Image (cartoon, rainbow, N blue to C red; front, side, top):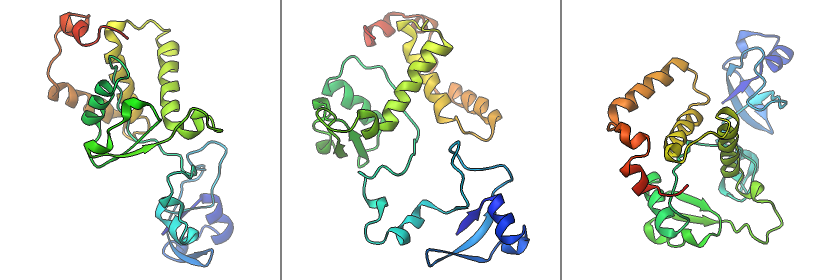
Length: 225
C-alpha cells in the first residue's frame, strides 16, 4: 500500500477520487493506493519532498536479498524513539548497568560505544551491539547520531531556555521534564499532554518539598553532578 503526495495526485491522476484503491507500479512491484497526503504536506524533513510514500517494510522487495532492514550498520533511516535520562554517580558498570536494567527490557538490542562499563550486558540477557568510536575514520556523531542529537538538544535547552541557571539539586527534575517534552514533541493532541502529566502526577508517589530542594534523600543519592 502507498500514499500519494497531493502534487503527484494532481499531476498524474488529475485529482480524481478513483485513484484511491487503484494499483500503482513501483519498480515492477504493485502497490495499492490507500490515500493522498493533504495539500502543503511535503514530508517530515524540511527541504525533502516526496511523490509516493510506502511503509518501511516495502524496502524488502526493492532491496532483495540484501535488504537494508537486516543491516544495522547501514545508516539510511533516521528514527528516534522515546528516550530515558538519568543522572548517575559515575560511568562505572554498576551505575550504567543499573540504569539499563531499569529502563530497557531484557532481550532488547542495546547499542553502545566501546566503554568498558557496558561489558557484561550480554550475560544479563541483552543483545549488545558495540561500536568502537576511538581510532575510527568516522565521527562519533555519525556512528551514534541519535545519542549525540539528544545530548545536544538537552544542552541547548538547559543553556538557552534556562540560561544555565540549573541547580545541581534539581537536575533530576529537569531531566524528567526534558524527557516528557521530547517524547511528546510530535503529539497531535496538545491537550492530552496536560492530561498525561496529571495521570503521572497521580500515579507516581509524592515527592516531599525537602527532597525537591535538596534534602537528605537528594544529597545521599546524587552527591555530584
